[in-house]
Image (cartoon, rainbow, N blue to C red; front, side):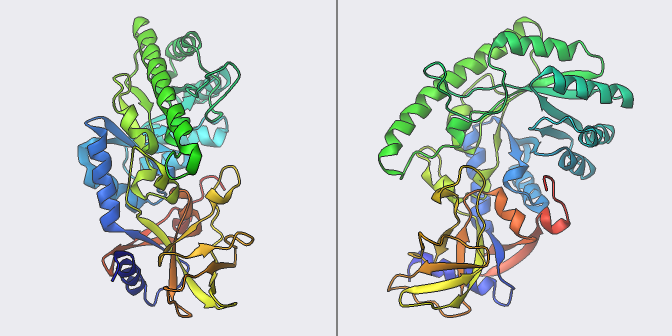
Length: 400
């Protein structure tokens, strides 16, 4: 029996009697990914990107297994920051700026609980809003400057995501001085995320792979130079902060080599969604799946599953669709894709599935699967060891 067929049977047996759709995390793969990340980090501190997991139990399992290798959490909303402060976490970095009063109150609450509840800023408006609330609450709030390190090889050509407007060391130092001069704030650090490296697959994508790998190599050199220059400029003004964050699961190998960085961020690596099948420099074991029930046979070589329209965010395309993973060889139909209430599949001749059997899929993005599930079944072999509630299952919806 092939290993993939054995794994399908194990997962099927583990979920026997459970209502479908259902989420599953393979604990052996999950733990192997944690160990692989620690090894790849080569002693650099690791911050967990919570948005790529979205289950407190799983996040705490990563922290427990990785121990001192992990520094803290990167959150994606202020309410989530307060949630983790109430849960006892003390090193928190909100990676997205906000001006909403309710959000800023959450940061004040987290700070009063004894956490370092830092938030990124990239302009005077962010800084002013943060400082005003901090003064009113009589607390000191830590601010982290986010920097744009997208790749611009030819003037206006922009390769990367649109986040911070800050690129020059002059602008960055000026904002750092502004923060440091305000008694209501502390200049806590710099975040410089290289999305054009961490978020771009370069293997198994045909002719595009070679030029993307070349772009990523050149961009990695450019990013390392920029981050080193920022660190030197801040150090020259006696402003070198305790935190300098960069990296992502897809750029881990390059970012850990930079002396300027005090830490790297990792999230998707732990669950290894299918977009991470296409990286030449990092490889992680698929750990997160969702199971759908086979409910129809619409014709020869076809079957239909109930549900399945778990589409990833980003630019619309076939790479954002979930992919059937087990049994091997199943394919989505190009004119139907994955539907909200049903997902038809093409079935190879050597695969036999009965009505009621599960098909296991992988999501394109690690954390977003949790938005469709109340819990993950934590499976080892053919047995469910535990269940891990997602934020959604706990009644928490940070951006909805």
